[in-house]
Length: 143
Image (cartoon, rainbow, N blue to C red):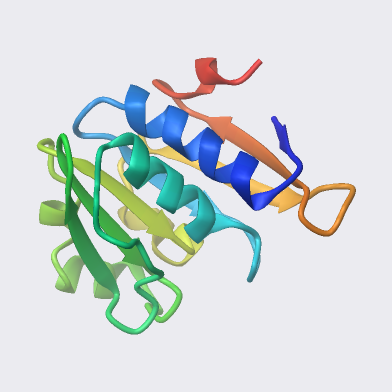
C-alpha cells in the first residue's frame, strides 16, 4: 500500500486500529523518520485512545487505554532480545491488548511467530511511504 502524506499514513493506522483483534503484536520496521510513530498514532486513534501518542524512545514503553490496552514499545535502545525479556516482554505482548514494537528488528528473536510485520519504506515523494504488511490478521487489509 502507498500513502502520500502523514495524514494518509495515520488513516491507514486508524483502519488497522479498528480491525485488529486483541493479542496482536505488530513489529514495525523502517528507518529513522519512516513513519512508524505516525502509523502508531493512527492505530491508537482507531482503538479510541484519547491521549497524545508519542514515541517512547527514552521511556521504552507507553501504555494507553482504548477499546483494549495499547502497549507501544520502542526497542531502538535495546541491544538484545534478552533486554526485551527483562522489561517484561511477555506481559507487554499479552493476549488482552495490542503491542506495537518500533525497531522490532532489535528484539526479533523474542517476538512470537505470529507477529504481524509492518515495514515502512520511502515512497516516490518526501512524505510518500510504501507500507508492507505481512502476517495474519492484517495482511488482508491491503489491496
